[in-house]
Length: 200
Length: 163
Image (cartoon, rainbow over all chains, first blue to last red):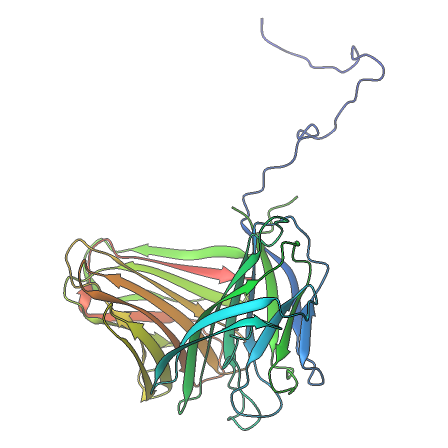
């Protein structure tokens, strides 16, 4: 017999009814990447911090363009959860157009392989460096945290390209990420960092 | 939770026949960054280059770091008429992977790109990373990839926008 009418009049009192077809189930969300927060440089601070990062993603990525108010080719270090202890290590592979080289650091107070990512005030106007930082399994509470960084800058005279890995010897979930210029210079207003959460 | 994906495929091109160029045009300004992903071969090993907004003047530069399996090298190229993304795969039937991240493509700064290339030819090839600069503050509305030896049939390029 064909269904010609549907009514809720026979539903027992106390039984939850749903107005939504989702019926209490989580909606399917095909999105894989979400923008969590964007922070622009102010021109008066050498530190940019993403805080209160939720633990609902698989990995994090920070993307940005960078310029500071002094120097030529500044670097930036990365600190997690505000930890200033000697709990970081890093490796890096880089080239400046003349020399291809490697480097690393152990028991450091930050991940220091953000070097060469940005330009300073002595570089022609409107030229910026670029930066991508990935932090995998950041919400784990059983694993130390591994990062990957890809940075570069070029001003049609000099350039610097770098890939690096970083280690934070701590199993806490990452809830904040700070980027700090290596020479104390300030991120200009042309600096923009965006934090993305990724699933899958 | 609504679909709030911040990485959106803008366009995809798969070549039905060999061609010298792949071009994305009429790119809107509604994103923060662009990401181009290219899977390519030409069976010759020709160089893949990129021009933005059809600019053919000497407004491009790059700094590159390559590894071939036997040596690492770096180079800096200035005042070029394009950014060289890397060599195409010289072996018929083998495909290479390239990514190009174009930052703040609609912003007011000169345009900086970060790019990777993975070119393995079973005994030869390279892995490379590079930073490129286009000395122009205009918003990017078109991207043109060129391989003088022709991209092979089946070459696929996808352009993503990142909010």
